[in-house]
Amino acid sequence: MYIDPHVHMVSRTTDDYARMAVAGCVAITEPAFWAGFDRGSPEGFHDYFRQLTETEPRRAAAYGIRHHAWICINPKEAEDHAFARDVMQLIPQFLQRPNVLGIGEIGLNRNSRTELAVFEEHLELAARFDTLVLVHTPHLEDKRKGTRLILDAIRNQGKLRPGRVLIDHVEEHTVRSVLDAGFWAGMTLYPDTKCTAARAVDIIEMHGADRLWINSAGDWGHSDPLAVPKAAAVMRARGHTADAVRRITLENPRVFLRQSPNFSDAPLRPTAPDLGR
Amino acid sequence: MQPDGLPPLDREQLIQLGFIEARGRVLDIAAFLDRVQRAASAPGVPADALADDRVRALCEAMRLALDGQPERARRILEHWSDATTDPAAHADGKAARGVPRTA
Ligand SMILES: [Zn+2]
Image 1 (cartoon, rainbow over the protein chains, first blue to last red):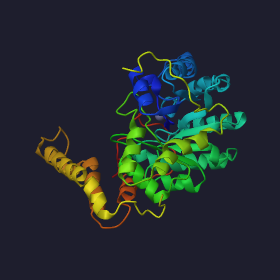
Image 2 (cartoon, rainbow over the protein chains, first blue to last red):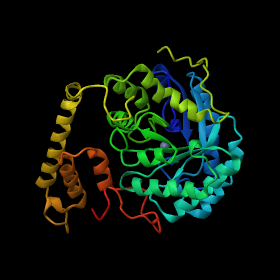
Image 3 (cartoon, each protein chain N blue to C red):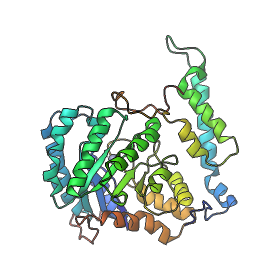
Image 4 (spheres, each protein chain N blue to C red):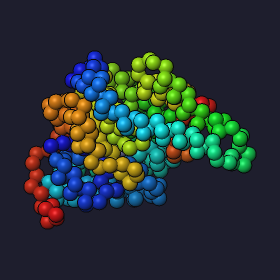
């Protein structure tokens, strides 16, 4: 049994749901993100948020997987401040939906002033509605600087408890600062960028498993929706106990996500007719 | 779980587990540098393959990997990080390039 706490199923096929179910996935959480193109209107986001809160929970349930969502405008589409504000107006109505856990994945992409301002406005929304927060940290050479700007912004705002915020896509050079500040940290398992399974296991060995989880961040790009169970296999090959694997892949996500009353990983009877293929 | 960094497997077991894969990756890097050096330079670009700041940053990282000190992966990522601290005036496109422009 495992939870994949960050995966973009709107970009994945039904076969991926079937494979994840067979691999033992019981629950997933899906942050709102960039779809590979810029949406042309706030209505485009409204439809996307409906997909995250209506369509995907149904697709997942067919395979016995509990689906949850995070709502926001992602930093890649946040460079137009007025547009971002129009989209942010839509967020409160979706926070009331039964599978929504909070605000995410907000954060920074190229570390611009507008991205930062939009990030701070999302933090205000999270404080006002008392939700959990899932934060995306930038890619490659931008990650260290962006992570610092993000941690400073959350600290300066001062309204969110670090234990209710997960900072995602940490690597060797950012994990310590995130954990030391009391936040949760996510490691994303990607083939080329972010973390490989072997490096994620190194980080667990060096920093311990407290407030740490792994995810596939499977999406429309080069990624693998089975990255979590594959990393579990790597962890076992590296001599870690079944308990240690279970903690990273199931117990830790559960502890963080259960802070939202909308999270559940209770058994769900699959109804998909093609499960036995 | 050993937060002191001590892996559950001993050194010999870890070498058994990872050597062939690491061997293949070293060859891939060497072949990448060979390929870049063999190629004609693009118009207006210096003929020296190592003049490209991305290729140079790769070679600098390999020096870090060979210095015998711990936490090579963290130090390489630090080396490849944008060292500025102020937010940028505007987003410079959507995609990062892998190493800072000044590297
Ligand atoms: Zn994502």
